[in-house]
Image 1: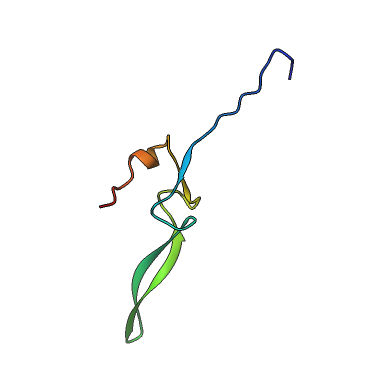
Image 2: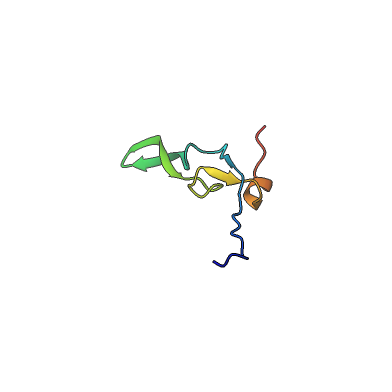
Length: 69
């Protein structure tokens, strides 16, 4: 880089995702195996933060999130 050019770094603000725990969200699933029916929790990546655990404040995921309450 020449002396006339300055290196710029963008800073992205982010907040913890309120819908998951470190990018993993547990969903309740119901299933039938043979004659036995039961339920359990299945871990899956969070759909809002895409498994990162953080939401960018400038992104559409933060603006279009479902409201709690």
